Length: 346
Image 1 (cartoon, rainbow, N blue to C red):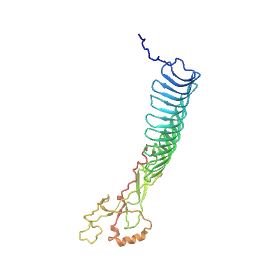
Image 2: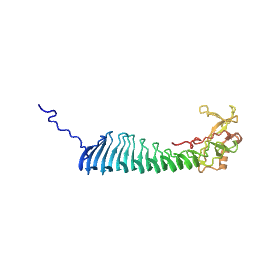
Image 3: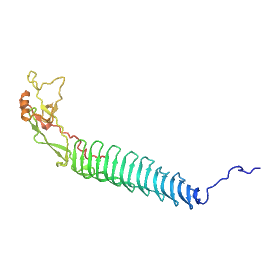
């Protein structure tokens, strides 16, 4: 009767002691580590692969039993993988880290952390290139955000702090001091609307923010048709102080000619209303209504006040006293909301 297992090759268990030299496989007594590769003098030396029971592994160079040199390390618990230089088992020098959550890092590392100069792409596709310390953006660096904004300046522990320039996707630009990732200190903002502010910023807001535009001068002006006129305005803060750090606000003016109801048989045609193209009358706080009247900026080569006055006298069928331009009823609207400059970009 044949013995049990006859013809079956004998089972070969890994050696209880590490191989001395050459290629060999060794499973450590705790069974958590398994090494396959080159040996020298009973130590891992040369190229090999160290496998961990949890699925992690390292494959690459070994020197005198230690992970040292070029290699690739994968951590099963995080899913991250590093390819590059190692010293005594830790990423050290230069390499590429691929993150399971998305994104990657290429650059200098120390004791397994980003340290020195590097290039980082996060899981949202945002790109940072610059200095790192203790695994964080720290020092001079450039950042391209997912909304198209670009920042070039100083960083402190992953926050913009120090001096920097922010160029927004909408064309706005801020240059100045930062603290805790917001505008803070002395800085200038050139907004895409044309508004500019140069002065002190506190927690992302202008310290002297204009909240309204005040029209200076008389409430009512008499202006001949076609004659130029000027309106003086002033930017004011909440408590009435003049906002001196800002410029470029836009004042939208609506003007009108006082509406006078004439008798049906009147020969004066200036105020006759076309039934098919009737203008909407403008209500004023002075007890009368106005017909909308076009207002435009002076064009190059436009006639001077005298020429305009003569032209008006020739074209206007009514006496000049019947034409009143009501500045008290002008609608002053800022080109941008009063709080726009104070809004945080992030």
